[in-house]
Length: 127
Image (cartoon, rainbow, N blue to C red; front, side, top):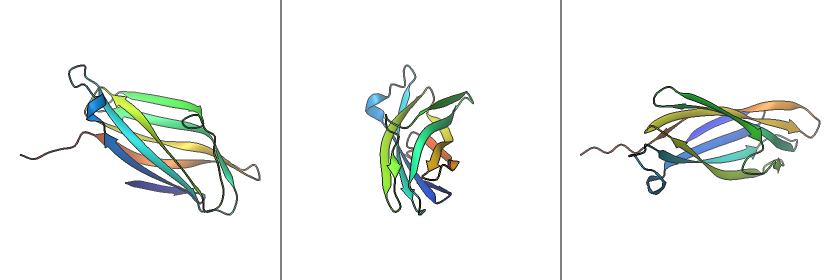
C-alpha cells in the first residue's frame, strides 16, 4: 500500500491485477487501484480534478486529466473518507502511476494532493 499526505489530506492506494479481464495474447493487462482519501484537516475539502501520469513497462507515458473521480467531485469533511476503485489497462505486465488530485478547501484555497508512485504488476510466482 502506498500512502501520501498533503495539507492534511491523506491518500492510500492499493492495487490488484485482474487476470479475468486481461489477455496476454493481445497483449492487455488489467489492473484495479483502490483509493482512500481521508481528510485530517479542520476544513472541508472538495476534490475537483484528477491528474494521472502512467508509464508502462516499455517506458511509454500516458497522461490523464479530468474532472473528479468516477463521476464524483466529493466533499470530504474533517475525519471523513471517500473511497473508490478504478482501473488501468496496460500493454505490459508492469507499469507505474502517480499524480495528484486538485483540491479546494472551504475558504477557497486550492492545492494538489500528491499521489506517490505506485506499481501495477502481475503477481510474481516462484516455482
